Length: 188
Image 1 (tube, helix red, strand yellow):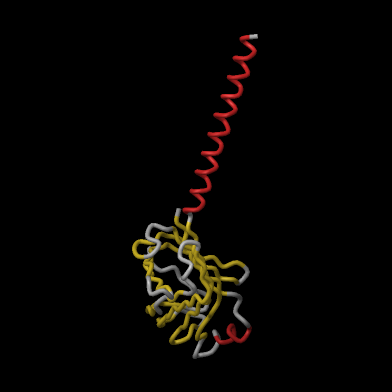
Image 2: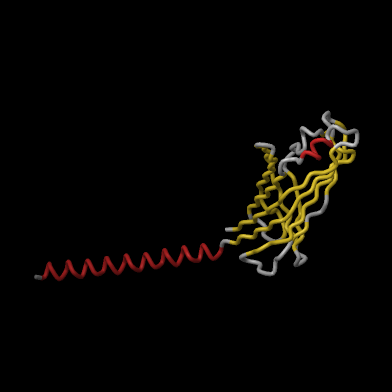
């Protein structure tokens, strides 16, 4: 009888310990999830070429611009949009090389609608599948808001329409391409 009561007490203590441990782990998981910050932005990208691109490579001024008109943030609810400075570089390009991969890493600064900034460094990969050009950049925020957060930037330039393709055959060449842009900042 004494052994039976001792076994019941031991079983009850073990069950209580298991419940307390489970509650602590669940509480820890919830707090870890609450500390994760995700900020996402969607917008558009445009690349302009002057002179325009033709079938053979030639030196051209390439101007990159991005606009992020819709942003949401779990940790900074006042963030609603972002701007990125326009950048112009001079490169050898052709209609076959719409998006050459420049030397990595690239440093870029985002200015939020709140006036705060985030500077991040990233490396890029460029893929062209079925005529859809995708530029994916991954990196980290080096200073400003979200410092230490990981960053994923995706630019998608859809198939060129027939008029743009024909522009590659003219002396003036293809003057610009545009597409969608997205940014995701994740802090743990």
